[in-house]
Image 1 (tube, rainbow, N blue to C red):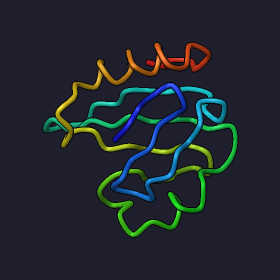
Image 2: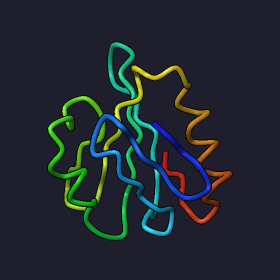
Image 3: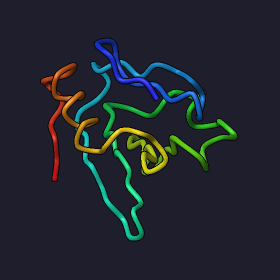
Length: 97
C-alpha cells in the first residue's frame, strides 16, 4: 500500500492510484480480533481496476458505490499512522470517527 502526495494505491487490488481530489473522507475502523480497515469515501465510484480486481478479498474492496474499504491489519503500519499520513498529504479530506 502507498500513501503519498498524489493519492493512495494498493498493489493487492488493482494497483491503481486514487487521487486525493477524489477522496471526501477517511475513517479508521477497528473490528474484533485485531481487524482494522481504512474506509475511503470517494466523490464517485471507485476505478474499475479496483472494482473488478480478483484481489479484492485481500485488500481494497468497493462497497456502497463510493466507499473503498482497505484492509490494514496485515500491514506493518499502525492505523493511526496511516490516518496521520492522509492528514498530511490531503488536508481537505475529512477524518471521521
